[in-house]
Length: 239
Image (tube, rainbow, N blue to C red; front, side):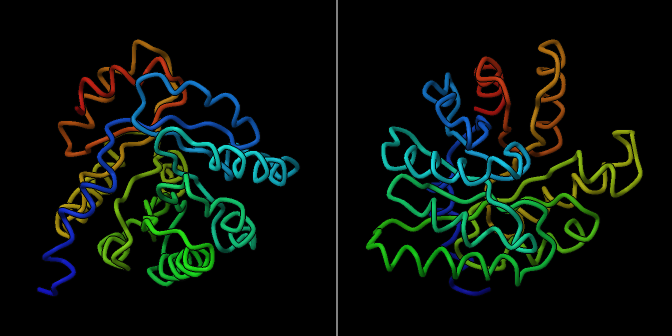
């Protein structure tokens, strides 16, 4: 076993000690003025920020990160979009805790983004390491999850995006996601990472607890929510 894997678990636990995350569209970053009980805020420059609002989203993300009073992650656009360089230029700031990388399929994508982050971090004189939270949302990503989890020492965690994955697999049933869920949990554990992030919850309040309790039984360790009122329940289950 390499020395990086021996020393890694302690460092990544320190990097992502959160039970809950609150998604906020980056172009509406002001909505994250109060995070409720969420352990960290995730400003979203990808799916929740329309193309016509991405420039404004970057501007607001920069301002938010310059004045951040709690841990902040940013979900950037996938490298294939040609937007990730602009995203990173806007967000590699003192308040950035980690970058959430969506729809990841290849370790080279992870290493490419990690290099861009590191170059900007050094150039701007930022002392603290900025981690990566790698999200898989396709069949190819699930197949590659073990390699993605070990792509670089700055991978602090992994997670599963089940909406896009369900569409890719052509399934509408929980049973169709069983192998993918287990694969992500196994990969995180094998790589010495924290238990993975469960799929984002944005449904009705009465479904939050049973859905999150299922995630806990399956081996997940945290969850992202769209409503700050849900964070307390998620913390209770995953805390």
